[in-house]
Length: 237
Image 1 (spheres, rainbow, N blue to C red):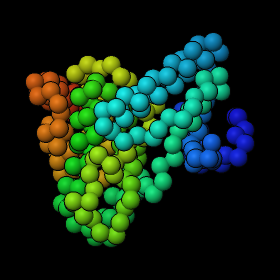
Image 2 (image 1 turned 90 degrees about the vertical axis):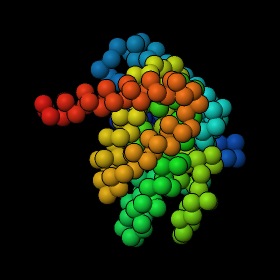
Image 3 (image 1 turned 90 degrees about the horizontal axis):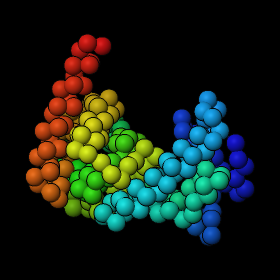
């Protein structure tokens, strides 16, 4: 484990540690990828560098596509670290949904607000052949959350932020996009069963904002195949 001078460890997952601090006068997150002891050291080093490059490339490409992501400040390949923007005044979307439900917010209103932002952003990613790889409400932030949910106030262009591109790719097939959507559907059913219509509304917005309509039809067709395979696996166990 590296010691990050002046940085505080704020999260630790299966793949990386995340630290918060100040870099060049800006609030910054450092994402440090673990060494995988079960892999040969040379192989682990090469694979980790490849993943870091892919993650940074995806974030830059996503931002160019009109998706709000943390800015990349600096990359230290030898120390397995990415220095990136800390998004201020933001709430994890999963927490926002859970808090809204607990306060008795109308689920239809909530679903429409979230669907508009998330559906638009995923469509923009896929239209540029960018696969996130882990689309969940834990990897989306909502900025500048107020007490009142105003449909006119929140939009996918500025208020919704996609984070954690650790499994992302910038070249993808129709099936890759279909699987990305299926991962999102399963995560929503698991984490937010109180809003059963959420994925279908996101899916509708996704189709509206997908740039290439013919390709979108192919993605929809492939998604239905992936969904059917997933249901079959669930039934069989």
